[in-house]
Length: 155
Image (cartoon, rainbow, N blue to C red; front, top):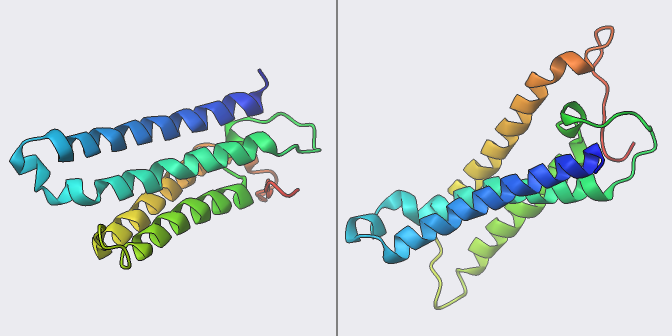
């Protein structure tokens, strides 16, 4: 398996772990004790976890599907510099979750909650912090004569 596929698989595994945590929160809300069911954090945690986990999936899919022509090695250091893929993955997941929350205003069996939108934005920010940390950890690979190259997907 080439490096791009391996990294993409790891990103999708991170998504699965995040979604498993989301399922655990939902189970606690449904089957947990009365004090857990009424806890505020468990009310907006699904949005927070989904907004954090879903960009890993979309970023992994975009990294896997794109064929770069540079022929150079692809590793963790390039993974965190895929600017368009990262922006697209955050936009798709965050936009979808915020749109779903907005649709809930019109649904009689759903509850609109502004805290869910805030949790969605916090989850997206947490994903971007992971990206930033990845960039900082691999910064030494990209510093060449005082310049940081742009390894965006579209190149």
